[in-house]
Amino acid sequence: MPLFGALFVLLSLTAFAHAQDPIARGHALIEEFCADCHAIGETDESPHVGAPPLRNLGRSYDLDRFPSMLERGISSGHPDMPTFKFSGKDARAARDYLRTIQE
Image 1 (cartoon, helix red, strand yellow):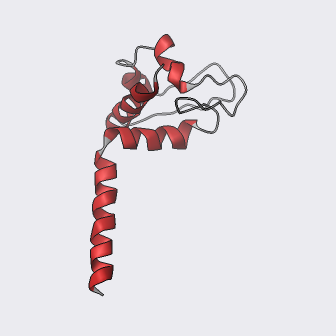
Image 2 (image 1 turned 135 degrees about the vertical axis):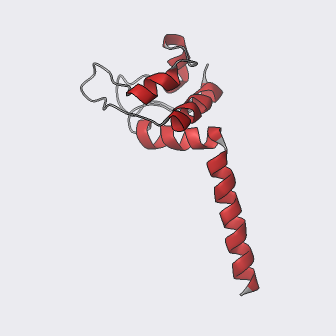
C-alpha cells in the first residue's frame, strides 16, 4: 500500500506541474482545438487542405495581441473554421506555446 500512495502522490504532483506550465497547457489547448485541421508543431503538415501551419501564425498576426483575439472569439471566413473563445489564462498559454514553434 505505501507504494501505491507514493505513486499517487508522484502522479498528482506531475499533473499539477503540467497544469502550472503555461507552454504545456498551451500545447494541450492547441492540440485539442486546432490539431484536427492545422499543423501544430515545428515540422508537421496540416491535416486539412488549406489550413495554414500554426508555426507561420506570427507572420500574419502579432502574437502579443493574439490572446485578446482568442478571448473575444477567434473566427475565420472559412466555413470549416469554428469560433473559439478562450479564458485569458488559456489564451496566454496558447500564445506562449505558439511562440515556441514559430519559424
